[in-house]
Image 1 (cartoon, rainbow, N blue to C red):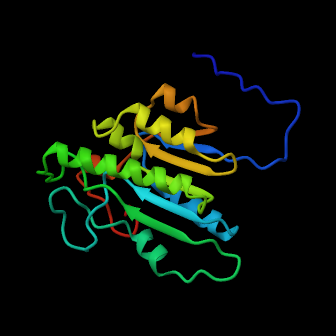
Image 2: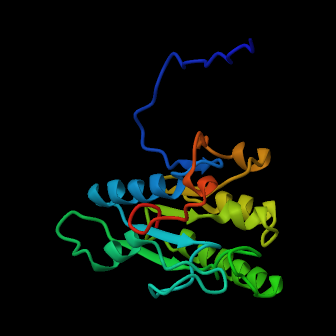
Length: 208
């Protein structure tokens, strides 16, 4: 039986605020869901949040899948329509992807996806350095790396731009040691069962 790696618990702890780099990764469902939950939690604490979605977003309508583009996930509809009252931070969002790459009906040239992803990186750089947002979520940015739209250094450079008290969340499937080394928190979503492998596509309001 493989040995479990022993976790070293520090002898002292600091209660000083610190901006964290958080990574949700793995082939299991729940990465974006966890990131969106964190957006709501941060907003409830008065923090301003910006969400950039790479790869999978792009279609603002509720039409059927077309050219690899799902309708924008339903929590975005909520964020766009919620009224932010006293002591509630704003949640802004932007879709910088053009849909799935090479699957589910995508017929776009890969260069088009690459140019869009690089524009997304530039937009992320603007948002991270603007000083306006306490939490920045780069949803599926690691997925953009996985399908060859970005390079590791693009993500590493964004992580290094983060202000000391700013929180940054990144999501994707695969492990890239150089990126994970820069993260404070990494949670891997492990798939046990998934309806896709029973021929069941994503359910609106549950999966998106």
